[in-house]
Length: 433
Figure 1 (cartoon, helix red, strand yellow):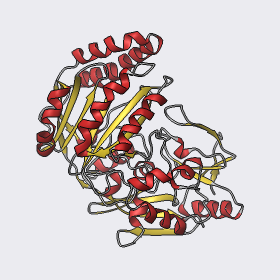
Figure 2 (cartoon, rainbow, N blue to C red):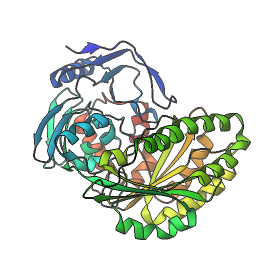
Figure 3 (cartoon, rainbow, N blue to C red):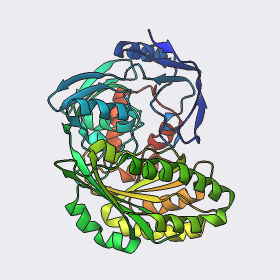
């Protein structure tokens, strides 16, 4: 039987979204999910499945029936490189499980706290021109539709490109089959570099390396460049102390203190950012792929991330210093820039083109809307597409022009959820009521 949760109150990881549901359920089987959706649909209620609450916008806000899937978080089957897991499994647990059977997800983002369903549904991605979103690894799903029907879909189904990145509009994912690869090791090379040099070398690195990204520090001309490539052996492991120093103490404890200082004394932000750039040091190490891709992020922030055509990267970045200099507040967080190849998933940000993803962030509790709106205006003019799980201010009318298969997705929604059982304010805005 679907179990009730203890609290109807909810907020997301960043703390900028809050809701109180009328009821919260935690089903323990596919049949229980289907039964509660049928019951809700019959009563004219709305249902929203919520994962790890790592989205920064209102996509997971539920004010009626909230469904959480911690009881649907186990492996289901392994068939060669095809691995089926329940959709409530957290990525960190998935990565650990795959390592025990000699497999890995070929691409990951830099946070592994999301559920599998949440990650693929919002278009979570890593970096690397040979990869797209994590959803591009999905080979099949089981989904409960708005009528409570249980449907199994794979790549032979016409609607499959809609389900891969479904933004919660088509149903509740209950299991997912991923095409994995043999477990692999990465050599990570991370080093400070002037922004001009980073941009000058970018095309060569993107062609030569498996995964490339960089961070630009506002109010400075400094970046941190990260290049990861597959290697046969882990011959240069990071010492436990260096890992703790860089990834826990400096990147979390010290950075948290610096952000709090900047929030109280905005004038301190430019010099502390400049100091951070000067303090950056190079490091090269080898490790299991997910240990390189994913890092602990304990300093909470708000985020907008935009995909733009790869060729538009210099123009989008060139607009940022002027935007930041004109704000009535300071920007502490670095700007993250990543790159992916094209795919054919209807609501994937990278649909049909090589992409640059540019993420702007601000310390939780600090003002951000003027910053985000100004950057969105730049990216929209370049044909950019907002990340479905990050802050943005677009609506259905403007998004239709950005996604060639937008109306095809809406047609799939009519089939999967004609009564809008899974709708909420966010979906009403981005897809139309």
